[in-house]
Amino acid sequence: MPLEIERKFLVRTDSWRDQATHNEHLRDGLVARQDGLKVRVRCYGNRTTLCVKSGRRGLSREEFEYDIPRDHAEAIFAHCEGRIMEKTRHYVPGESGIWEVDVYHGELEGIVIAEIELASETAVVTLPDWVGDEVTGDPRYSKANLLSERLRAAKVRELRRACLAGP
Image (cartoon, rainbow, N blue to C red; front, side):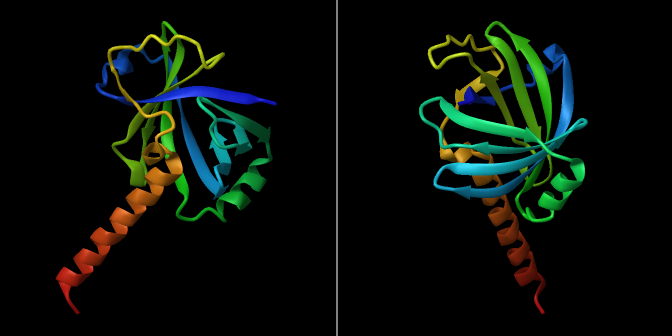
C-alpha cells in the first residue's frame, strides 16, 4: 500500500524564503471526511488529482492519489463550497530532505506550515532554525479543522457587524 510518512511544523520566521528553490499554487477541495478518512481534489500546475487518505497511524497513513481530467476536477470542486483552500507551496532544501512550506491564502491567510516527507517513521530530522513547534497529528492543525475554525470565526464577525449595524 502506498504510504505517506510526514511530519508537520509551524514556521517561526521567514528566513526560509531565501532558500526556496521554486513554488507552485495549489487549490484543494475537501470532498469528504469521515472517521479519519478524507477525500481531496487538487489542482496544481498542469495536474489535477483525486486523493484518498486514511487516518494517521503514528507518522504514517495510506495515500492513494490519481490523476483525473481537469474538467472532472472542476466539477468536483463545485461540490466543495466552503471547503476549498488555496496555498502557495514553496520547496526548501534541508539536511533531512526537501521541506514543503505552505503559505495559505483566503480564509486561511496568515497560516504557514512546513512539512517534510520521510522514508521511514524512524528517520532523523534535522530542523532548520526557521522551524517552530511540531504539529504532526494535532487535530487543530488539520487543513479541514483549520478551514472550519476560520469559517466559523468569519461567520461570527459577520453576525457581529450585522448586529452593530442594526436594522
